[in-house]
Image 1: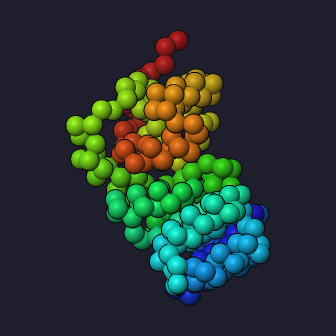
Image 2 (image 1 turned 90 degrees about the vertical axis):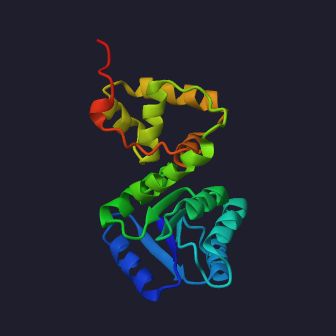
Length: 220
């Protein structure tokens, strides 16, 4: 897996590079602290994943994300940032990021996020998911599509980065059952892709805060 790393802080880039070097099958092939240079590197190397902070020299990480999505859609963008409040998270989602990891995350979480992103999935740190809860205030009074309890539970787990197989295990149902509920939720929300459903879940506060014991026992 080819990765390009972008962060203005040299020490941060060095630390992240060292972590990635311990992850099987992953390699940082280039790094920079400049946004315009990042776009040149992406054009030259066509990485699988771009890890970027929001703040870069000459061009922001989110502006770079929009350009990467437009011109190099095969390269997924993972934001690694300490800006985990509602507004920057919303801006990152709007720019089209695939995943968002807080800078104080553990090594295991970063690896989980990278592997999920490489599979075409999205991952958001729990801290980022929690910050999206603040958006519930903005949603009050709006017409919200009707979702079943199962659909809401699945969206909570998706917002925490769980895979379909993991969700099936947590909820005690089959994988096809999870896929069916997910498809019906997408239909109810008029969404076309699983990533769009995950982004919707993050934006609307489906953070997975319900404990596993709150899930109803599946019928025999």
